Length: 297
Image 1 (cartoon, one colour):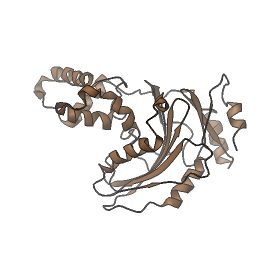
Image 2 (cartoon, helix red, strand yellow; image 1 turned 90 degrees about the vertical axis):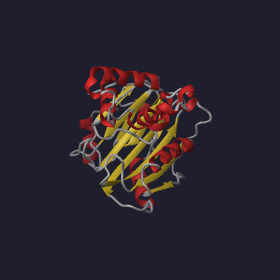
Image 3 (cartoon, one colour; image 1 turned 135 degrees about the horizontal axis):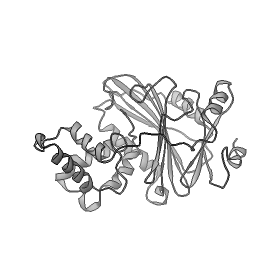
Image 4 (tube, one colour; image 1 turned 180 degrees about the vertical axis):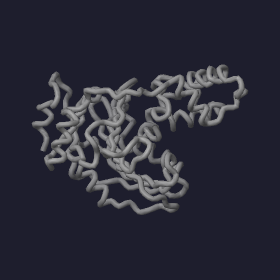
């Protein structure tokens, strides 16, 4: 699995690092690795500490004495992946309608909605025809929800477009954490890895009725996961009653070495393909959650 990290996940992974350890220079490399690879190459729980990760690496060293404790980055990731494997099987039950029903609506040109119960609320969005209805990867554990969808013929190892939905349980209860700060933190992390080819633009959201929403587009000429490709990303964040949700649309293309201007009109069109996006109350209803559908524009 080549890419499951999101810029916004960087915020969540900070929870791995207790304040008392954040300034420990001896753990700087491990801290950076955790922020980049957790949820992608390995799946440590949110409450895991750097000491927990180091203990997993120590166990790996004891099992591989021939390495004399000199692990390469790939071997370090392997040690953590063995200790904290990511779920191999997709979880079902998150979709408002079956993939077959959603696919039928999309291919007949009808407006198809996806409604996903994520922690305390339902996330409603229009499903863009670019992506297959069935999730290619999905997990919900330790207060983090992640769902990745791709075009029908593409794989997690080789893709041109990716749609990712995330949920962060109880993050909205942090009054100092605004959506703009959340997205900008992830953008700063992405910019530091783009070697001078990074660009960014916030998007106007006058047409979205919901107040707690923020959207931006970022572009990187050489994506760290695929250096021969560029990657542009629409990031839409929503702040609910208790949780924070994101929808991210990534697109890969030819690599470039200098910052490129964001094609705002293109990404506003992509954003329009997702509209309406809204949060609804989580009730005792079963899919397709009629109360949420009935209030859609």
